[in-house]
Amino acid sequence: MDLDLLERLLYEEESETLDFKAQQYPFDGADDDQKSELLKDILAFANAWRRTEAYILIGVEEVRAGRSIVRGVATQLLNQNLQQFVASKTNRPVLFSYTPVVFEGMQIGVVTVQLQERPVYLLKRYGRLEAQTVYIRRGDTTAKASPDEIAHMGSALASGSALPTLELDLYNPNGRIKLGTCLDLNVRAFEVPDERSIPDYGSAPHPLLPSDPLSNRDFYRELAAYFRDVGCLVPVGLAVTNSSATVARGVLVALEFDALSGISVLGASEKPPIPTKQRAFGRMGPGTPAPDREIAVGHHGNIDEVRMEIAAIQPGVTAWSNNVFHVGAPKCVSAQARANISAHNLPIPLSLDVNVSVRAEVYRIGVKELRCAP
Picture (cartoon, rainbow, N blue to C red):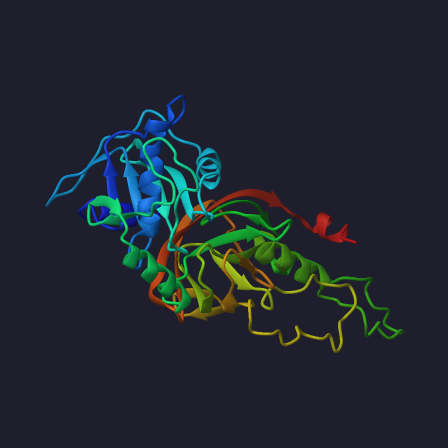
């Protein structure tokens, strides 16, 4: 949950996209009547007429015409348990999530309900809730949808007027492990000798014999520069998930890093190759990749920009980048990048922060270590 967004929500009033709960919902150990309160609210927001995600802030007391008060909760619910609880009772999967958040030093719960296919209703009666009944959020209250409203829900879906819901993850390409929007990097930073103190590679040429034209005399110096400039960088990919029931078309992801923050960012084609002892002649550069799902890095003054375009993302699908970019720092540093996600059928781009924290362990490399390189 974006803390800046959470702060803005505290100044809003309850509506079709927002609800405040001063106390945690009864769930663990609760009976069906008690647990049906949470189920009813999730269904009502899922069916609501809205153009953005809806949020239930748990542990927050509403203050009308002012900033709502964060009270906190004593216990948190498990998203996995809630997903199983809801999925077993509805006519179709409900797109929502429960996230524990620490805000102002207190624990609160955030239920996020995405835009999705409607109507959603219970297949069987549960607690106080009726079967085959479409509950809907209107303003700050919950009601039963009329037959006309239910009919319009289906026509809105058929016309494609529902909006996609997109989520950004950075990922470790080794196994496609999602990292969310927080990068905690442990890197090695190499200290190398001054270039002037590094000898040429190979034996000294004999005055009567020609030198080997293929021998790379700068190998040790190039290797030292490679360790210094690239050794602290790690590969990172981008992934965008469409958690809605609507195809996202023409998706553009852009991350902006402050070049003065101490964080280094390189594109895949910018990373230099590992130096070799033989001179490389006619080494082929990177091929021309297809633009779809390909990460490109640009450097514009004090901004390092990472971009990726995706032609379309089907509902429920994660689009993984075809390549990676490289990020890191030669010393311990924390910085923040700004991410924006836009799409042809998303009227307002999504904006969120990407936090990068680098812990660098320094290794010193001398001429002796350079000479031992294979």
